Image (cartoon, rainbow, N blue to C red; front, side, top):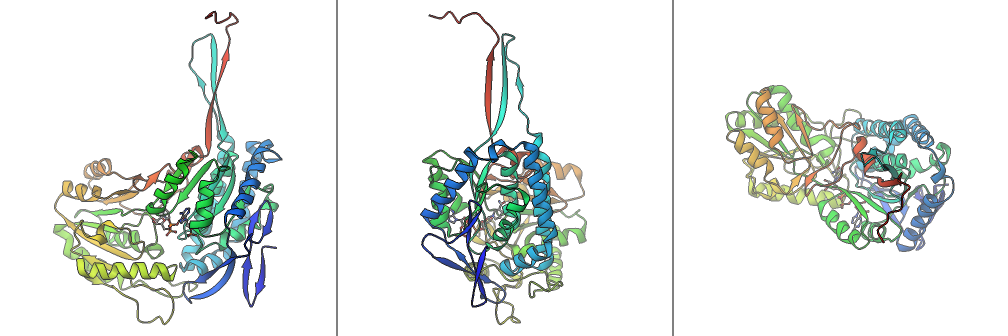
Amino acid sequence: MSSSSKASVQTYKNFINGQWVTAASGATFPVYDPSTEEVIAQVASASAPDVDQAVAAARAAFDSGPWPATTAQDRGKVLYKLAEKIRANTAHLADIECRNTGKPIVEAEYDIADAATCFEYYAGLANKVMGHVNPVPANALSFTLREPMGVAAQIIPWNYPLLMAAWKLAPAIAAGCTCILKPAEQTPLTAIQIANYFEEVGLPPGVVNILNGLGETAGAALVAHHGVDKVAFTGSAAVGKIIVKSAADTLKRVTLELGGKSPNIFFPDADWEAAVDGALFGVFINQGEVCSAGSRILVEKSIYSKFVEAMTEKTKRIKLGAPLERETKMGPLVSKEHYDRVSSYLEIGKKEAKVAIGGGRPKQFGKGYYVEPTIFYDVKNSDRIAREEIFGPVASVIPFDGESEAIRIANDTPYGLAAAVWTRDIYKAFRVVKSLRAGIVWVNHMQPTYVEAPWGGYKQSGFGRELGPWGLEEYLETKQVFVNLDETPIGWY
Ligand code: NDP
């Protein structure tokens, strides 16, 4: 049983060693529906003793029992079955995700489908991990074995809860690691839900543990724990820095997928309609709660005014509404805390730049953490709204004069997650692509993400890569094996 009912609000437990367990302290934390501001669940709040228990379970499952004996093919089959279960339960999982995050139901359905695809991808990759034979002299044989890194602590944010869980769990399982996944406190519900499938798909107890709790307690204890070999983190740069410092004490392997302030660059020769759409999609999808949001919109001066006008006109069509309504294109922000944070940036923006549209709370909602899609223009790249990650539906439009100025402004940021460039000129497009300091660069699009292609940042957007074979690499160690073929003694002493 994953839960018990308390006055119609369910209380969920943690999933450790194949069992649903209450927190050692008995504490729970509330989970909200951001469109109604109501509590929809209570969840066990883990602290150090629960972390110890989860790490012990993951450690034992890694060191002994059925998991180390599984073949890569077996692990692939487990992942296929998990993908199938998720796909078969898309409607249910999307409903939970939609209520818990506030994202529109149609987007939630895409997220669940993408999560299933991610498990399928790594199902196929599991038995394609191979070592090398190394070209050493003829009197020796040297080859490499690729081995699982061990126990992975995986800490994820609230903007794509199940999808981020899939990006972390799927490659780790394929590699043969064991996992402790800590979802964000705001959005634990879909990860809890998929734990119900683990036994049926053939995951032995302890291989994947779902540990809920607050970042400063459960998250911090996991990162510092001596029994953890690797930390995979997605979240803010501020917490990423705390994690690196803590993990340094035990020299854990760390991968970080952090935030961004990504430039979306528009030249006059771009396809006009596609460009205006792309500017809005780049920054407003998922309420702007996207690490790769194209929140700095760089527009060449000759089209600048007309482009701001066109963006403004099209923004009027964005339908804000209840997340479960299928026509809704933008729901509320995830939490009161985040609503207050984004609202404070709206006030900062009004002082720094001009408002083309939005800038406040939409009048039609009595409840819910809704924010108007907002476009600031005549923004300077030195303004706070151009430098700091807002993580909401807030665009900062910045004019530029020519290609080299566009590149200079685009790269003038501590972040380097993503960027996009819009032009029909193939020479210009690839010159700009090569000049941008970002881990992902789109040409004439912004945001498509495929499991086959790497994802991750330059600079303060993190290090390591997720997805594709790169994502699997991050869960593997390389062991070099040397075999002496020369029977004569070394003869050194
Ligand atoms: P946070 O960094 O605040 O939190 C992320 C996770 O870290 C949560 O599970 C949180 O727990 C946990 N955490 C918080 N403090 C600690 C700590 N001291 N030690 C260990 N874990 C901790 O980010 P948000 O949840 O606010 O997510 C938004 C951020 O994530 C944005 O900056 C965004 O850009 C980034 N992001 C990056 C992506 C990428 O692929 N590059 C993808 C998605 C988001 P809890 O919430 O329970 O406190």
